[in-house]
Length: 200
Image (cartoon, rainbow, N blue to C red; front, top):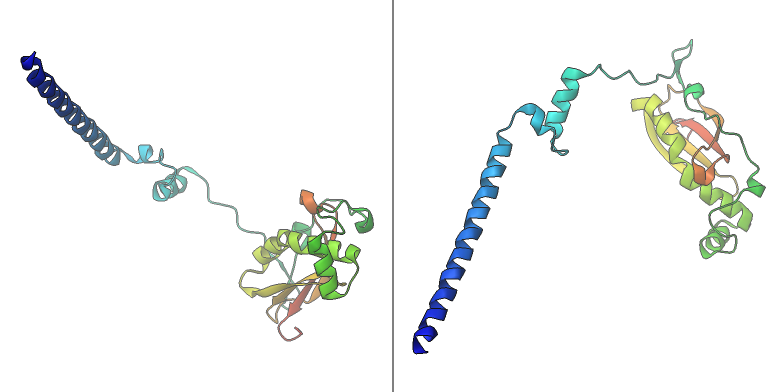
């Protein structure tokens, strides 16, 4: 019986030693696999979705160059004018008074907005939603203007509009854009293109 008292602890130590050794061997295998993966060829690098350089190299060799961006209209006097044919949607305009707004007319945000601008709750619903949806049109306009774009703001209140401030060599104009995004689909967004010399 005393012999077993010594044998059992020795067996336990031996098993723990084997387990630690097995863990070291497994870690070494993982480390070796990682080193091997780093030395694979360029095509295998594309297996890593974060390897942007390899992806760019692949795109540069196997694909056609990207098409040039849509350009604005140049008027006879040399000014830049937005080409709305590349910006407008084919969405049908809807009646703003019959629209199903995503926020309730008596909800706290609508009531607070109406009080802040001294307008009705119905006007507040409309203005708030246009403000949320305006980036849809803004992005397409900025793409055309490039470095002739300066800044933008949304005019809140009873006469909401997206106001885009541009360089003096851009034609000033007003335009009605029909939103295509589902949450504001069909609502009319007034847009004003205003040069720095005419900005208020």
